[in-house]
Length: 370
Image (cartoon, rainbow, N blue to C red; front, side, top):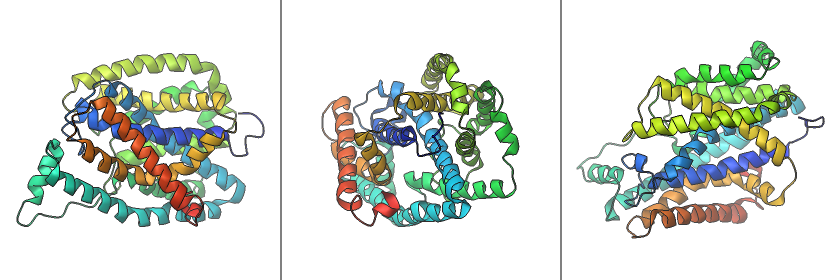
C-alpha cells in the first residue's frame, strides 16, 4: 500500500460491494445446482450443472473476504478514534440492525416457505418435508436460527474477542508473523484453518444457530484477525504482490482439485481432510488474491461502485427474503434454469436497490444501514 492509505481505501469498499453481488448470485444459483437439490428450499426441477463450477468458488471467498474487510475497518476505526468509538459503531451499525431485522427476516422466510410448501405444484425435497410437517396435528416449533444474519451475529462476537485481544495484548506474536515473508501466511494460515473445515460437511456452511460454534469462530475469526493485522502493517500487501502470478496459478490447480472432489462427493458433501485442506487453501489464497486485484484495479473513485457499496448493507438484509419469494414463484414455470437464474438475480438486485433508494438512502435509516 502506498503512503496516504491510512485514509479510507476505495478498493476495500468496492470489494465489499462485489462480495455482496457474489452472495446474491451464490444464493440464487443454489436453486439450480444439482448438488443442492436435496438441501435447498427453493431448489428447482430445472437444473444447470455449470453453476456449480462458478458458485462454489464465489462461496469460498465471499465470506472470508467480508470478515477480513470487517477486521480491517475495525482496526482502522480504532486507530483513528479509539476502542470506545468501535464499540458505539458496532452497537449502532450491527447490534441494533440485527435485533430489528432478525424477527422480520425470520417471519418473511417462514411465510414464503410455508406458502410455497402448500401451493407449489413441483416442490423441492425440502418443501415436501415442510408440507408434511405443517400437516401434523400439532407440529413442533422449529429451532430458532439467525438465517443469513449469522454474519452480523458473529461479527458482534468477534468484536468482543477483538476487544479482549487488544486488552490482553495478544496480537504481538501474530503481528510479528506478518513481518516475515508473505509465504508464511500463504502456507501457514490454511494449515490453521483446515481442522475447522474438516469438522463440517459442506464448504464452510452457514452457522445459523444461536449457540456459537467453535469452527466458525476460529475460521472466520482468523480472517477478521488477518484484516486487523494488515491494517497495522500497510506494506504487507505490497510485499505479497510479487507472488500474485504464482498465487493465481495455485488457485487454478487447487480449484480444479476441489471441483473434482466435490463431484466425487455427490449427492452430498462429506467432511474429509483432503477437501478441508483444499477449501482452506482456496479461501486464503482467493481472499488475498482479491485484495491484490482490488488494490491494483479498483483503488480509484467510482460513482456506481460507491453507490453499490452504500447499498450493500441494505441488500444484504433483504436479499434472501426477496430471492426466496421470487424463486418460489418461478418453480412451476417451465422455463430453463438459465432464464430463471437470470431473473432471480436481476429481480433480487432490483428489489434490494429499490428498498435502499426509497426507504434508506435519504432517510434516518441511512445512519444505521446506509
